[in-house]
Length: 175
Image (cartoon, rainbow, N blue to C red):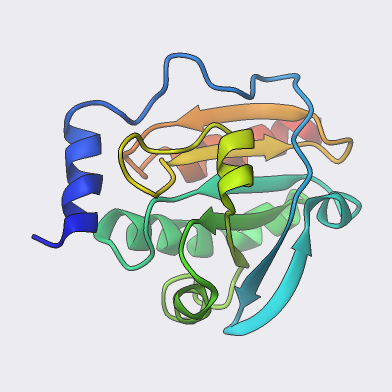
């Protein structure tokens, strides 16, 4: 088994998925950041503050592009992209992967539906999403309101509930 896949599998198996105390709680201000990302294979500069001017952001962190869980999660977010847009929100995936990897992932697994971006060490620390003992993020989804306030946090190495919980939180913002 490849070391990264082994680390993801081990983390999920031993329960490293949901930190007991996440750095960002509901109601906290989301840390701003700038990075590079890709959408439909094309690189772009991403600044969270600029994205929030357009409306709420679902910022989801995933461990490693092209692993089975991360691929399934990207497909699920892609399948729900119309529902997120209808609710006025945009989805942004984040991982510690490099830009060339994310360019490919944005096309093949995100299906050109939403951007993915590189999470720097500082961003990983600010959002408290580092997997212990490896240079990867855990699987955590944040829903951030237009004013920068964290409205929902879901941290679980299983990808299965991230889309549904994020979409429900975004839809609740419209009420």
